Image (cartoon, rainbow, N blue to C red; front, side):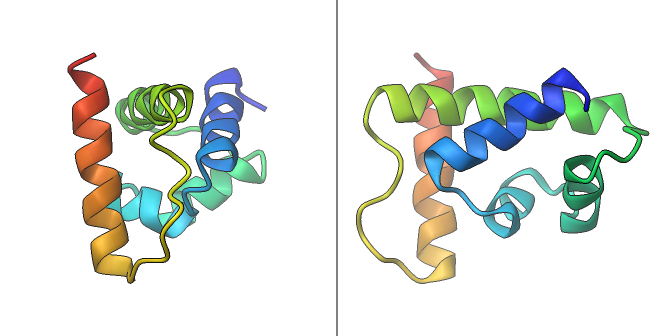
Length: 92
């Protein structure tokens, strides 16, 4: 498995962000992320780099104890909160 893909999947696991929410945040299809997860070929380096950069911010949020979220939120709220945390981590 591609090392960047493994990093992304580990970040999702650590931050408890679902593939569906990650897909919404990055505009990378769930199908693509599942294909990567199942060892499929990475056909688009731009998407991979976007996902990797987002995963880096998720890891920073875990280190800063901003993720995983402790509150149960509806999908729209959850994605909005995670998005704001990711933007905050890009400034750090």
